[in-house]
Image 1 (cartoon, rainbow, N blue to C red):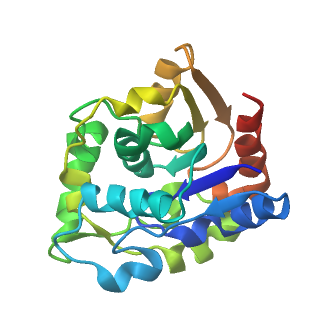
Image 2 (image 1 turned 180 degrees about the vertical axis):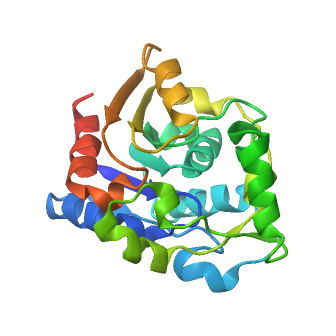
Length: 234
């Protein structure tokens, strides 16, 4: 039996992994799909103080509370920063860092720093509508399949903007995780295409490119489940 912790990206919640989690559990695996503070079913707890460190601690708490080890830790989109930060605290408990069309940060990176000034300014401008919160760009922005647009649109929430501003500082324990996977979703135009090209030939990395939009876990949960299970063969 394997242990999976699946971390959602910006504006989403643990809901987005429900079909993937069900598939993995049906095969006997342990699966956790935490919702990060201030998002999804925890949107009512949104507060100005929530930042990247909060979300890292959300996931660290799950791993410690359930005494998890040998974890295949998946992060989608912004969740790439979160799982990297978790590895910085609990690297010894993680088998694989699985970046699902996700940010792969270097020491000192923030999400805003990674996506560049144009998108950052657009998001800051949108955040002005709600004060301290970033407005969800919507399902079409994520290149979701047409039949899933209404579902994703209904579920997405605003996101505490401090999470995108705060820089991630490495501790050195991230290097303990030697297995890393990057999945590039080709239909979503982002920095992730350049990330795929950067990591695909690096030692310890498995790089996969799929003809899908950003929300692979919603549009093709069977494919994502299969990719996650392949980690057991590494």
